[in-house]
Image 1: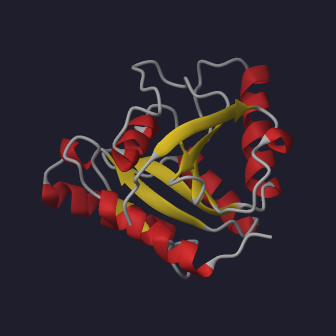
Image 2: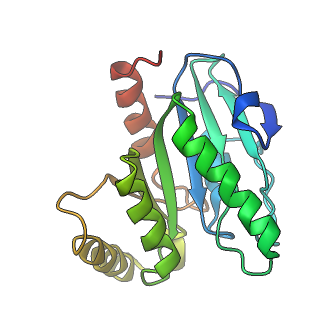
Length: 201
């Protein structure tokens, strides 16, 4: 699949104000500074998502209209930014949970993991929560250009080994680099395969 056009449509903190459509949505989420905005820009070959050196800049649900409304790419707030106050962390948790659990248009959640880091408790707990709530998701390892090929494979293998302690079957796994770029076609082909099968009521 190719993204022919992509445009920002709306930002909000209330799932009830998301676009009133019946087309599939693919949401992207991860810990702060995982490279989410860079990945979105790489996928869309644009500067739709604003990148920043400051972690935790995304505080809202951001909808991007893809291919004239064929589907939506959704940028969710990052989680786990310790510098936030408790009230703001609680608000971000509310936004994330209400969207993930209350948005029937969301057909797949992409959970971004920095390939350079060993499994983090906050990510493993979030993934476990997705499983408990039967949320369809895939794992996207980011920043693969920061490691050599062998080191990158080892990190992915170690992560999958950790997940198998809790999961009988692993979710789809993608390895990406926004700098190279790498992984773009794999993710877009995966989205296209779901688009062919899914019907959003």
